[in-house]
Amino acid sequence: MGNICRSPTAEGVFRSIIKKNNHSEKFEIDSAGTHAYHIGNPPDSRSQATAISYGVDLSNQKARQVHESDFYYYDFIIAMDVNNFEILKSICPNESQSQIQLLLDYHPSIELQSVPDPYYEGKFDEVFDMVYSACSSFFESIVKKD
Image 1 (cartoon, rainbow, N blue to C red):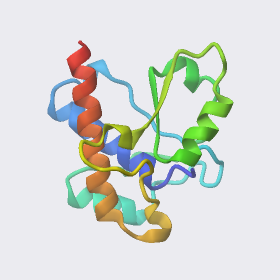
Image 2 (tube, one colour; image 1 turned 45 degrees about the vertical axis):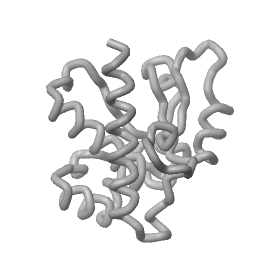
Image 3 (cartoon, rainbow, N blue to C red; image 1 turned 135 degrees about the vertical axis):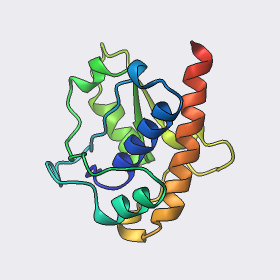
């Protein structure tokens, strides 16, 4: 929503996965919120602290809002929850070729559709683990297509 907790965590996690697998030159990754709450702000300090404890640095990120051009530029637009998924689908231009999906559709064992929002719930470690697992599976699904 505001691009300060879940989506920057997913961006940082996915960047670390592609770097570890020597695929950095094949991907362009960014995160954005569906709302303009925190534009220009860094990720939530609790998200940053959790990520850094797992070796993932979020400190260079700044919140931004999703823009129409994103739907033409990115192959995949991954939503953290059902509400944001529906918002993204509703603002996606008809001509866009982007695939809009839920991140947890890639989680190998969880039955949730939405990543819990740690901003209110405070489950930063749980969210990190969930995001890491789903991002790893997402990466594997893309690599298999190559």
